[in-house]
Image 1 (cartoon, rainbow, N blue to C red):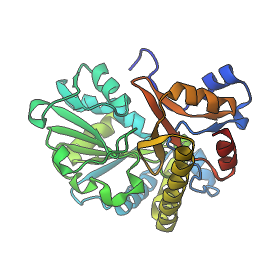
Image 2: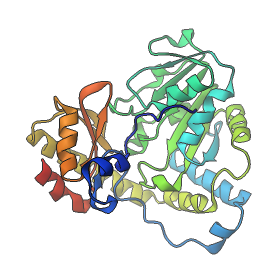
Image 3: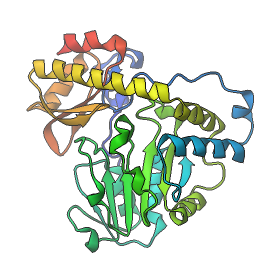
Length: 316
């Protein structure tokens, strides 16, 4: 998957080069990462010094199965981030035609194209060999139902779905040809941990496991992932806080003249007329936001951390 870098959130280096300051002085709202991450406790020494063992991997998979109510007939594979899985999914079957409706997370189309697939923006399930849906979609926040399934290979990217577990399509993970992706970096706010999951039909997951090779997940990620997935109280409190903060952000932005265009509880999408102009004005206050090359009036903001709200309000 070489070639030019694709448009993503983040990119503070470019913002620093253009607008000055130091990284620690910037508020990065360009991503959809929970600004109050899961509190990581001290880990045992062997999490760092020993090769990850099968017992730790099995414990993480049990925690994932319980947390997401994974069907008994579906298998689970932990991986070094959802991106590592996205890059390998097109290799599960011979190249054909894949339906990926824009706008959505652009790494899916890039991965399939890199493996020789034809990417179709509009198509029926019966006309393609694979389909990708992002649930909820990034950046629009749209949710999908079971009617979106049906292609021989259906990838359901649920990187942001932990904000609304009742809207997850995980109940279909045991359907032949279905793979559900989960990310640990968004809801739990631990993007640097690099932990993701593929959940689906056992034969597909077995092939993915071979593509990833031995010890795909680090010992610290196995330990932290198990703790966090078993901490249902933290998850419940976090969902309530994210909802409150999303509503607060909407109030600030709408008060400044923006129109809500979509999003979810981890990021908000606004229609602002001149998104590049808004981004530049916020950047003067060392607040970084997200624009999109295909929509000049879309501005996406993640949620501020507790100490950042006053700066954002002053900048607006």
